[in-house]
Length: 143
Image 1 (cartoon, helix red, strand yellow):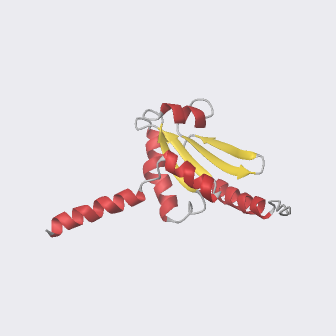
Image 2 (cartoon, one colour):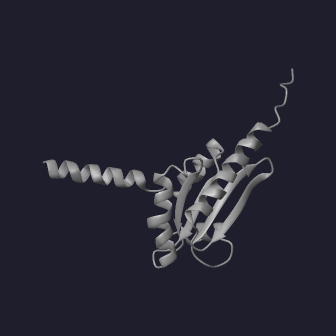
Image 3 (tube, helix red, strand yellow):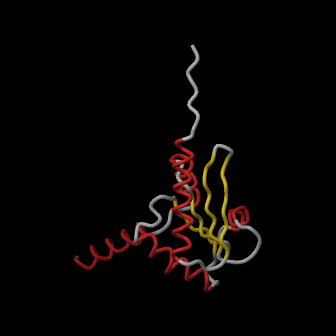
């Protein structure tokens, strides 16, 4: 009985560590206005596996991704979404979207990235998002 309970708890905790599905992440980013960070890769790409299994989980555990909505897209399983996100060829690609008054801005990083590089772009995007939110024009309600 204890073994079954432990197995269930491990499955639940593993699911909690998984990145949001793209559609859910997109919806959350639209609703909250948070920047969205998307890792596009494949299972056969060693650099992608490094990003998915090492670098991104470490950043997440350290709370470095708390200011963004994070998701992953498998380019083989979701080719249409991957093509819309990617900038040319090469894996992995890390796309950071930030909402502005003129629409969504995208920044792309191609290849394996260091934790410090990812942390820097995330911090800059979060700070810019907060700055832009403070500048939103409030229109008076007409009578």
